[in-house]
Length: 299
Length: 280
Image (tube, rainbow over all chains, first blue to last red; front, top):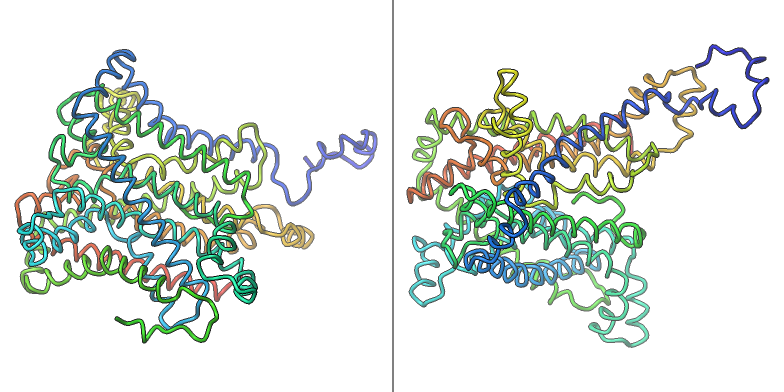
């Protein structure tokens, strides 16, 4: 690479110098190609191969068989339940995320760091442990759970438990996305609006919300993907009652364990399509509104 | 409740009461009360009983397996994730943006879907599993299968924490290193990697925390043989199915404690490395 003499190099036209000599801060062409090859091979084997296999197995007996398995009453009830759980837990999480981010970024108070730690806690708790904790609090064996069941509002093995589990595992998503964006934007715009006589709600709706809308959408998107796909926590609290508390991921497990491969992978394919749609929307958001999203994204 | 204690310093901004009210109510209902109930169950069960439950060969084997494989998976992701972040941040190649988006697939793909897909691939009759079989090996239903599942779910963490840091490294730093006579590898080792260390450690910790508690993607591929390929979260599910709530709580508490102490150690290392190399 560097063994060519100066005279040889000057013999070349200037536009070819860059090919002959690379800057000292670049890797050699060979290194680049090898690193890119490792990265692409690794991603292909680890990530793309499993994705491809979902669709291959779903369509193993043709598209008609796959569609027919999704039209079964059990499958339809699972799809309905999953949509319902997401329709409840995502807005709940969005409201919590906005409230938490508002309090944390617009005010100074003691214990703020501790509050942020508590909000982050669900990330380091196993979903199964989360489900277990909910069973211990709301299950029939506990004081609260016994009373809830007696009054006709069971939480565990019912919809409320599944919603609580879904909210637990997605708890930090919206708040974590909003907090850095709102810190960066500061308080001056809101303070100006207040000085001009706007009410609190008006300030939020006309000043804050337009500033955070893309970050909010980003958080909601990730929250929705996780809420629809959660398995561990829901498996513990749902009781896996066919046609009643079996969400789509739970139904995938049941079908798979019954060796109904096409049916299991067809439902998995629906969730995989949802994941691809989530990635597509997320990528579009990142390209179009990179400046209005959290600078360092972790989730 | 604790609103008076948490009163904000004089701020003209409205909505502190409402915002804090929603935040604390949700936090209590979803996180604090359930985790509290778990700890309370452990206390009412009695420390001696908790220890007796954990101190059995089967539980030890499961805890050992979960944490050992989670560490290995996080270590793999630390290396491969950093390489991926470097390639995505520094090199231009056709399809780079699509590859960048694909990195997040393990976050978006439900774990049960990943679980059955990986099993289909690595089972003895699957695409990769049959290759292993022809060479006399077995991947699914062994520790290797669990490791692959844990690598899958933790893959994006390191890349996503390290990539923005690489993008922000100023070229001048590397130029300075080169003009002082450092080769590319030396610059990488002494200049670039130390700058990436705190972010990489954060990604490692997130990946580790995720892998330790992972359930959905593992149970399909693990085979779930007691003492051999049984992970700790599965033991909790088994205890719950036997209505042994005390036993389940004991293992849950053990997992919480080990996870938190690991995260604490990693945080300490992180503070130490930040201090050693200065502010990044």
